[in-house]
Image (cartoon, rainbow, N blue to C red; front, side, top):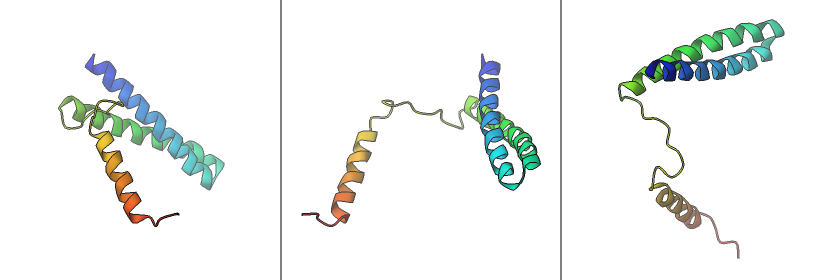
Length: 91
């Protein structure tokens, strides 16, 4: 199952890299969009491979889904209280 997960992670990063590369290349010219897409896909696949390996070894934490971290409500309250204290009254 590890090989499949690594391949999926690599493909996701390759797709994101291709989209970003094509977008940036498209700002330059039409032919640069295809080159940028291919280069971005290669770079994304490499990043995905390194992240998948690091996650398997325990070096990178997986993404948290909503509700996994109970301290998020405390952080939101802290941010709101700091904003309320720093913003002028609107009375």
